Amino acid sequence: MALDVRQAAPAGVRERPRREITTAFVVSRIAVLAVAAAILLYAAPPLAAAGSWVALGLLCAVSAVIAYLYLTRRFIPAKYLIPGTVFLIAFQVFPVVYTLTTAFTNFGDGHRGDKAAAVTAIETGSVRQAPGSPEYTLSVATRGEELVFLLVDPATKQVSLGTADGLTPLRGARVGVTGKVLAAPGLTVLKAPEAAARGQEVTALAVPTGDGVIKANGLSRAVEGKAALVYDAACDCVRGNGDTWTADESQGYFVNARGEHLAQGWQVNVGLDNFARVLTNPTISGYFAGVLGWNLVFALVSVLGCFGLGMGVALALHHPRMRGTRFYRIVLILPYAMPAFAMLLVWRDMFNRDFGLINQILGAEIDWLGQTGTARLGVLLVNIWLGFPYMFLVTTGALQAIPRELTEAASIDGATPFKAFRRVTLPLLLVALTPLLISAFAYNFNNYNAIALTTDGGPFPADSPQVGGTDLLITYTFRLAFGAGGAQFGFAAAISVFIFAIVAVISAVAFRRTRRQEEVYA
Image (cartoon, rainbow, N blue to C red; front, side, top):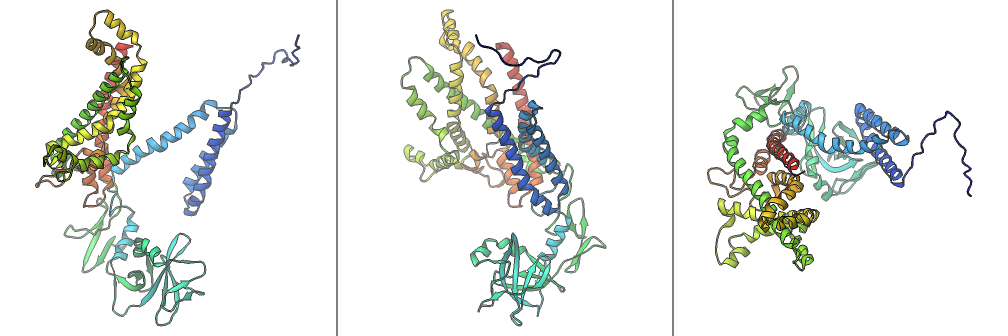
């Protein structure tokens, strides 16, 4: 007889239950703490160097809260909720909020920075070399991550260090026979290919001097010039070239009396202007309805075609008398296993009128992608070919979850195979797969690659080069927002809100019908 030597708890004292600490719990705790510490160590020095004390304080506070939660035995539910909540905020909430806020601004090319940055860009961009101004032999170097100029005066052979803060003498530099600096203490002199790779930074760097600024003229020469346009804080305007441009805070531009503006502006809040532009601009709204109609057809036909074909193949292979199902399944999922972008490019070449495989097989010279009807048919066929293996896989799994007794009972009651499928199998499949069909619709509604890599939105009519016969809203708006006029992120964000609203409404209606269907077959 074994004796229990454990000491009983004193009378009136409630024994505290012991928590079982699993290996998975310990590993997850260590992983979360390690990730939090790594983020803190990685982000804290740059924030401190930039003087972002609010962001640094927030980072330290969040790290402290995470450390407290995972180093104590309390708050067990929070230990599991915190990682998911952080990822939800980082990858879902923040992008949506950032898109919405961007939609109310003029953020884009020419409006990327604040007003001070715009003034600096205008002045440095208008620098012109004056007659008799100094010229220097230029060498490009780096000081840590900062790009700097090493300037040699050909007359005095004096070496100077040029930065965005100004020009200072440099001692200890070694100058070669060509007059270029070969080495300098504390600096890394870039070779020609390295300097060329950073050509935009070299061009943008302006070294201020007492009489103007020094700008690079190529990679081996720098000249001192004066700005033709100068900002005057008294009138909040830019003067030069016999004209005056006054700041317009509503547009984020410097505008003259004729309504002309300088190329460089700054980011401002424009309210609902981007949304109004979508609805009132005839170039955009005139084609919006037609593109939206084709977009709905493309998404619906793609989803229904993929589902119908995938379900038909899954039903055929699910039949008990079918043989060789493993081989057929491997062959059928090959399109899904291939990289989609590569297959789209292959199909585009197959539709080529001159050397495409389809015309060679048919012995025809059909311009498949040059006519709206055949181009739309082509992209639909390609998209269905790429998408049906996924529907085949999920339908196969759903069919295996449906008891065969249900269909056998229906056949015993005298139902034909088609009626048993329509009344028993299909409703049960739809209950399981409708959420996937809705997500597939949302994906195909914004299927940029399927259009961009096959037709690029074409064919384009002669009177409307901005909208093509196969353009979806996503490709049409991408061309408008990032076309020849430069990137317009605020405008693109506004159109994204419209697209999101359309997909959200359609998805909400579909999910509501799905819940009703689940209640019927529950």
